[in-house]
Image (cartoon, rainbow, N blue to C red; front, side, top):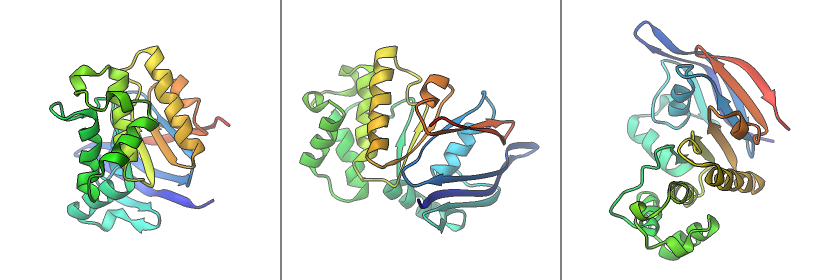
Length: 221
């Protein structure tokens, strides 16, 4: 199986603080990986670098063999738009757009909006009947499922989720985990940053970060 993402000797330094310290990691195509660690461990910094929202102080990030560390800010934006599907804890939906329009917005930045394709994406997460609702008219779980539809609409190479169940109740957490299971079964590469062991145990592999270093790897399946 091919390596889709590779981190080589990644460090991130803020003044006297080394948020990441010589991280080496490979993610296989189609793998479901969880990243765990206590608050301040560096997992959010690692996510930002993988998601092309930040750059390392040292080392290389390779996505499908392309060295992201050498790219400009505009080029990183293009990579993030075209190859990475981002799912956030805080949803980040546009509050004056409907669920359907929020999904179509991701299409707009990638290519051309396609209402039928966006509606199909909402159908995949069980929300086709809520397409015309604003975020304020949706539950937290429904908003997160809109985010998942938005992340999938441009067929990204990597799905990257930051605490995707952090704001959800138990029932909605189960629904979101089932969607991640389905994405993985379809062959998608999924990386989830989480503090919840019950979320992480569904992945194939969990890496633990502590004080900016990879301290442990757990193979769950």
